[in-house]
Length: 197
Image (cartoon, one colour):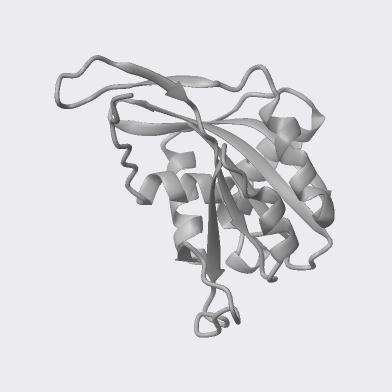
């Protein structure tokens, strides 16, 4: 399963995108960071099609029925998990596509917990402390791996290793774009209906 975390920074000028592959083994979810992108906020919708053209991303997957039907091969639909402290309707409409599953997530802190977006209804709402807790657990259990080897990912590795003492207020940018897929997969149950064609 491919999950793409998209986080618009609190300053509003830039976006961070984290592409994560989730695998299931030993009854736990394991995560591989495949790509990290930092781009201007308005360029966010243009980045996703480029990411999905990456030949290393799985295009098909097998699903199994609990009713003893034969296995099926279906298209892998990436999940886009988007968070922004702003309304960003233009970016949201650019990210929605029939071949992708789009979910908007609202992150709350003690200050803005009672201040919903006007005219906006997120698919999920999560406390910042919950995001931090889920990501910290996955890191401590060594279930997170960064695949790419370049200077950017090396900096990100150091950021994650030194992150355990980071306050919630400083939790922004790349860490949020990674925490979104981790929190989503660790807490939201995934159900896929087996349909015969």
